[in-house]
Image 1 (cartoon, rainbow, N blue to C red):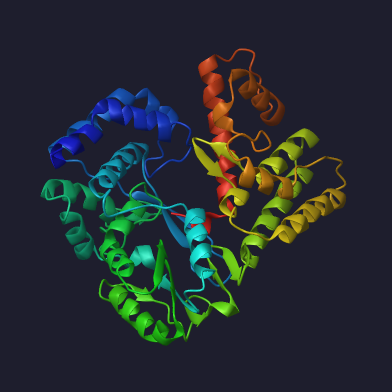
Image 2: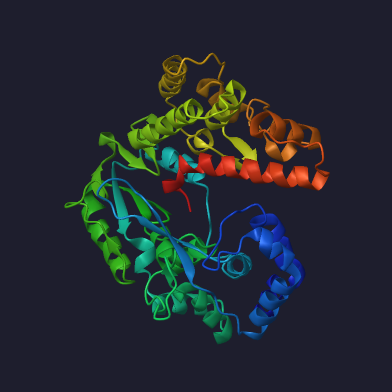
Length: 443
């Protein structure tokens, strides 16, 4: 299919309405215009017509983004997240679909747990005795626009389409809009539907280079690179890879000066990657990953303690969801799914003990689910288990039970459509909380 035909197809009005229904309708986020999806829905037909017409004729421009700052911990600069308007969110999602189609042959997205599964197999294969771990400094804000444009040109040779893409890339992210706000000259905004695909396109030559290196095994997940190799080649190889990144304007943290970010070492000394800790055949979650989970578990009890309606039923439901994770919108969500490649059963027992200690500390008598059993269900009975909730399989009756028992809804006058809407909105909100536990390790 011709590039323009594919572009027109992605921005057809029917497709844009479907994007709104599938991706936007349950979100409460507002952009710089402060219009939420409720108000937007009343104008859906006219707004979608504007997006479609202006995208296809090449005149669409993106609004400024609302800037949101997320803390990364003490003494660390916050992460800048860009929040688009509802209309731009629809356009960006369609653009993401278009880019994924155009670059399907050169850009692949793999689940982190699948990456870890492969790392585990090769680290234990006996073929390698050392590793190189490299971390890109300030990745998204360092992406150079001229290099990104040249990479996009390989598969999109329509200047007007590229101009629309760069309207999204250069739109400034601001706390408060001013007339003198200037377009962004470097970097890709984080938090947009196109952010990850654009970053992957930017690195496609790097990925090709890494995949062709002989006698090593290379992995790149966002800005984290891991290379399994021999001790003899490690230091020279690291310098070659660092130079490749430098050539496209990206700085790698120095393995000598900042070993907590980048490192060269023997596999026998262990290493961590994507939140996992590898110690020879022992594979566990990194301490920071464990502490983040424990903090979120304690937070559920603290929230219960300070709530006006101290419902043990709601406490137990929220706690169980944090322990087991869930399936929602055809995706596995939660800490246990992310860390499904560990073999540290002792850790799971310690987490179960920690939950029981929280129950005692907050003086609540509930019967929470178990980390140990959840892990076994995910490992051996993933597609048939009822221990881990699959919200995609809930019928109206189950949806109503959840809304009434755990969110205190009065559903007597609700239509079936309203029940589905509120169920998906509430579960979507809970799933976002699950993602906080592992948010540093995914696209």
